[in-house]
Image (cartoon, helix red, strand yellow):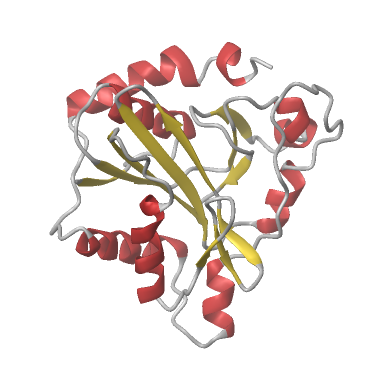
Length: 242
């Protein structure tokens, strides 16, 4: 297992990094990343069904499509994204990929519980949604982790002005959401700024896998990721194909 913390806050770079580690590499990876404000929609979703595009354009929030299914999510600097990539086995991974996330959060005074849709909940609020993409030989499972996200902005951008306009597209399932930081503050625990929390989280995840240090992307890795980003994840025909 290699644990990598992406050097980029560009959503298209990080989506391309996921594809690169999935399709052009072997072995196990855990990729952590933080994106600038953006909306990431599922593979089979229609932007017009999920996003208030006028508001996003006015506020410089870009929309990107990922490899996996599932619903639309809002990313910002208060949200940590995790992605586990491995060789496909005869036995589906199920929710096992969430075990290290649950263990790390528990060690940080955050007793999350597993929900029915392979998501994480706390006190009746969703704090992490997940999605998956499985190919012939490899599988990818990734999710969001709401730590100190702008929840007002999240609700605003994910409130389309013309919902369900394209009926054939997959639809998001709305859930009440909450930040992990608010739980820490309410219960008198240390609630560091997002970047500090993410650094602590990454170190605890390393320990969970018995590793000493984060791995880095090489110059060659970054060059290939950039090529995938330009070829696919910034292109309108990919992001707005429905």
